[in-house]
Image (cartoon, rainbow, N blue to C red; front, side, top):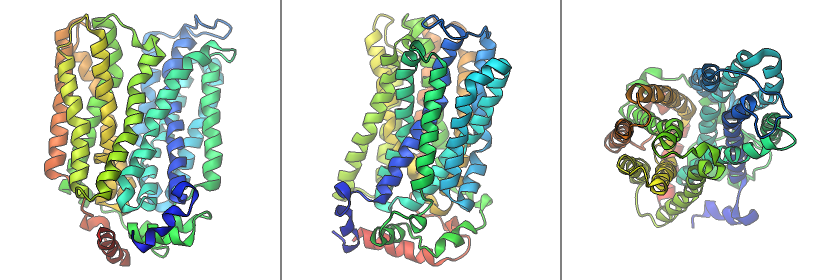
Length: 472
């Protein structure tokens, strides 16, 4: 084992401060997704609270409910790119802090806003929550680019972003229970918002934008991380002052391939998330929203597979079985092309084969966890200095896809009980998975791009040296 890695076994269970930072980010993203998903369940209880009639109910029409549910994304798209720029300039810690803390406080205020301002004020609240959460992914990628050693980058990305599934799963599994309890539907907002506030306090105390400014880290671990990512304490300020090469981003073939891949994944994922409940209800007569277990199952499988794939990646890396470039593309292919096949098969499952349909849906969503070791970490591969901005750009495009996908489904499916129309929807999603991964295989790259350093910096030489040392 290289001498500069001996400290790995000196901490608790061989973990360092970088792992603690990943642990905090994981729970931060979990809180963020719980705050995002809480309304989908709470809205049912707010407008038809048969399980607990002790709390106020609102007579909001279906159009109003649809507007409320979609309003989050109006704000979410707008702050993706600015979020990356802010994280680059001011550091990922405070941008992530504001993103989650603002959303958490507004969540706690949701019940009173519904009471005094009706659905219109709730809608406005969700827009602001979307604006705040738009900061989260770009700041997280900025943090990972500073904290995750090169050889562990895929695993760190997986650990942190698995919080999406964990937060969604917990919220979907518990919201119904909370709404039926003495807390009623307001308890959904108070508990999820309160947990977000608690996390924000913990992050403010223990979080750090870089190893250089952390009060917890040892000198040995700090040196190891900085050598691995090619960033010294003296470089931190210089990196923040680099001019952003916008034109280089948009003319870079590997980045454009990444943008298309991220968008394709979003199309398939959101087609499933928004339309599968309707498909199951109308074709199979199963209302999966009424079953917390069935609703949460695909996300539970996805969450668990994050760690399975991460373990496999660690074994492959330890035995030097494949290069980073090959590893990214192999895991991305698993996460894209297996769901592609399962979606095609789903289109031919008979109306009396409900269990098989649920199994295929679970596989489709669950196996997508492999992409965290694929394209999700590629922004940092291409440009550690601008990873947050790159994530902001691709996540903005991806969320436009998440808005367009349900609209296209609405045009295709005129009769929700017609399986043939649903087949077309699944074939289109499969096509996106196929093309998106093919583009990534052909044009994707893990090489640090020349525009990562618009001006010559000492860190570029350090990075190349660190790469060679780690390989040997």
